[in-house]
Length: 247
Image 1 (tube, rainbow, N blue to C red):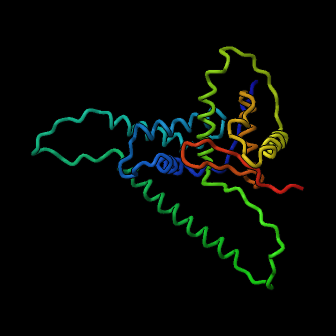
Image 2 (cartoon, helix red, strand yellow):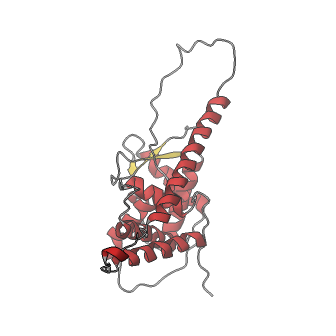
Image 3 (tube, rainbow, N blue to C red):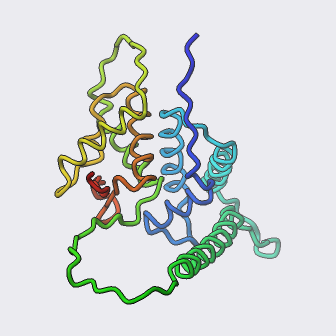
């Protein structure tokens, strides 16, 4: 019996977080959401998660159904109503818009409290220290890279390479330890530490197991601050840099 390679990632904060990411990413007016566009992009992310066989929470699928329902309502022809009988027709997007606005408020408040906590943890006293002889090193800026940026880059890569895949192939089961793949990814990134390596270059094989393990290896290395990802602006190439300390 074939058993699917199941992966669970705790970085996903929910469907509203994904929608807010898409709104910010595509610079969409939250008060006038283009439902067709946002639904298409949302479904692209869901399909990428399914391709990786990630453990998608049911709330993501519920939101997908909600978006498709709103899209259907927006496509229905508007019936002509006589002026004396005309009533206010509620925008199908209204409820979703209000939920997103409220979520954004709480998310921004959480960020403020998080910054205050970090500042409080950095306040301490100690004797004066002379720093003149300490070496000054430049650090790689991680940038505003989220789990959704990573998924978006992966989805684009899979779409670009789809036409290269053979129509028929034999699948050979090959277990790849994530520790081994982490070492391989880290070695590749170290060799290109100055200019960085593109996200696509780390996926050297097209088998599903290799793609999943490579993706998880990248996330684990980011989690332990061994690598960082940088994207100059939206839709640009994602670069991976080495940020750890050599022994």
